[in-house]
Amino acid sequence: MRVHEFQAREMLANAGVQVPSGGVAVTVDEAVTAATHIFSSGNSIAVVKAQVHAGGRGKAGFVKVCKNIEEVRTAATFMLSNRMTSPQTPPEGLEVRRLLVAAGVDIQKEFYVAVLTDRATRRNMLIASAEGGVEIEHVAETRPEAILKQPLDSQLGLHPYMARKMAFELGFKGKAIAQATDALLKLAKVFVEKDATMAEINPLVLTMPDAKNTDGRVMAIDAKFTFDDNALFRHPAVAALFDAQEENPAEIKANEFGLSYVALDGSIGCLVNGAGLAMSTMDIIKLHGGEPANFLDVGGSASEEAVTEAFRIIISDSRVKGILVNIFGGIMQCDRIARAIISAAKTVGFQVPLVVRLEGTNVVEARKLLEAAKKEIPMMQTASDLTDAAMKIIAATK
Ligand code: GDP
Ligand code: MN
Image 1 (cartoon, rainbow, N blue to C red):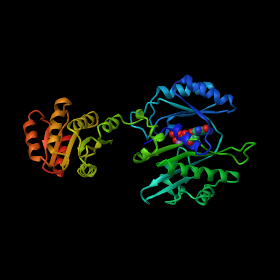
Image 2 (cartoon, rainbow, N blue to C red):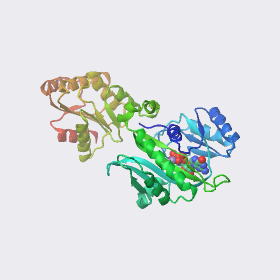
Image 3 (cartoon, protein in one colour):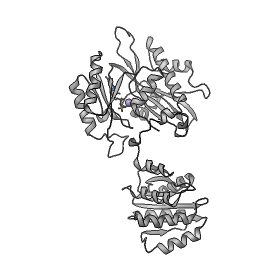
């Protein structure tokens, strides 16, 4: 589960990390009010930031550093009336419903720091770079040696000596070393305590020195957290931050019916039972030159109604040019799927080719049902096995 930047910043602030203050606004007027507070409490800059579940906002023009109220008004108006598109959004972009208006800081240097679960080494890992900011993806691609890594202790998390070593390697000097060490330790602590899968601060900044802070201050000015869905039951306060409006509506709908659905970019919709079979179905589609439009596991005990809903979700995706049904009936009975196909054909209607491969419990009855319904569902073909099914749906959609 993802949360918004303002929510992640609040968690960091609660953990003791230095975060510039700010307020959330849903209208231009609210943004102006928030900025007025910021300017009147002695800050010379206010930053207006779109709150969407995607990064790359800076380059897209959805993070604006403003020097006066007029600039805030212009930035807020622009962000609330345009969709944001970045390499991390769907092509049609995202609607911006909320803004964060935060006190701006004078930046001396930007760093990247994150704690995440590293699957390759099967450890939680602190990742950091002295070249943080909006170009971090480019740095990671072209100069991987500029990305520093420190595995966390599996029992004790990030030790103070590890954090201090990282602060030195990142090049912090003077009083900023202790501040950076402290920020890293607190970030790692939040990550572990809240069962996050990623806790990223990009950028963690060193501010310009001032009279009070002669070595500058270390502050988090952007934060992106994701949490382990399977651990949310332990964190009701985190679970409460779920924002359905930021999620794919099809995925939400699927969830209501107990279906596991993940939208992908291809053109072949898949309806499968069991996560393993769903994965291998996607593999075999790719093997034969197709691209899956989704991962959809109807599970073992989905009702006819839920399976009909699954078809509805697949069909509602305009990218879907064909549907492959691959069911191995164990607990799921094939005739239930057959009935759902027939019912979906009646209530939803199939405009695209459909290939059905059924095997297992009640398959004979299922085949009879489909055979009898063939006239009503002319775009349906049956397949004898998985390879046959993949080849047929790819041929039908090419
Ligand atoms: P992202 O592009 O979605 O990751 O949004 P960020 O919040 O990271 O902001 C993008 C960039 O805007 C940062 O890397 C900074 O260079 C700049 N920026 C953000 N906040 C401030 C600020 O308070 N002061 C200054 N000077 N620049 C800022
Ligand atoms: Mn950022």
